[in-house]
Image 1: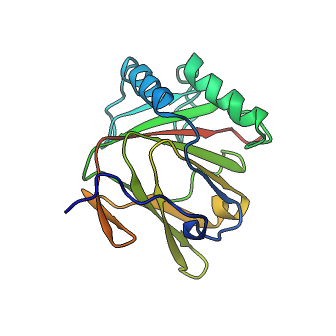
Image 2: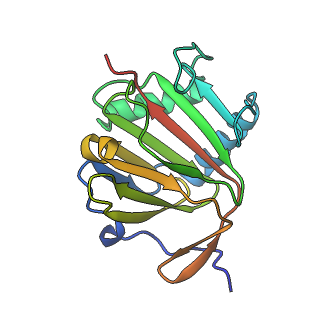
Length: 190
C-alpha cells in the first residue's frame, strides 16, 4: 500500500554535506495553501518541459523579469532576517512538477551567489545529491513545507536533482508524488 503520510525526516536522515541545511515545517499548512493560491493567480511560462514563473530576472539570462511579488518578498525578507542568507535574495523561480516530472542533476548557474534556498509545497519528493569530484551520492526527502538551504560546498561542489518518476521510496515506503511547487530563491553575485 502506498503511504499517504510519508515518514518524517529525522536529523540522522539529513546528508552530512557541508553547507546543506534542512528546515522541516518552515511554513504551516495555511501558509502553504495561501502560497499555492497566490502562485496559481500568476502567469505561467510554458517554454520549458514544466511550467515555471521567473521573477527578478530570467533563469540563466540577463533578462529582467517580473518583480518578485509581495508574497515572495515577504518570504525572502524573512529568510534574510533569520540569517538564512547573508545577502537579500533578488531572484525567485517557481517550478511546478507534476507526477513523473523531475529536474536533471545540476549545480545552479555561477552568476548566482553562495546561497540557494528552495521551499517545497504540496507534495514530497526525494532529491538526490552527487559530489562531482568523487561521485559520492546521498539523498533527502523534501517534505511539504520544508526549506532546503544550499551554501558553499553543498552549493558549488555537489549537484542536486530530482528523478523523473511518479513514486519515490523513502525508508522502505513508497511515496506517491502529487503536484509539487518549488519556490527557489537566489541572489546575483556581486
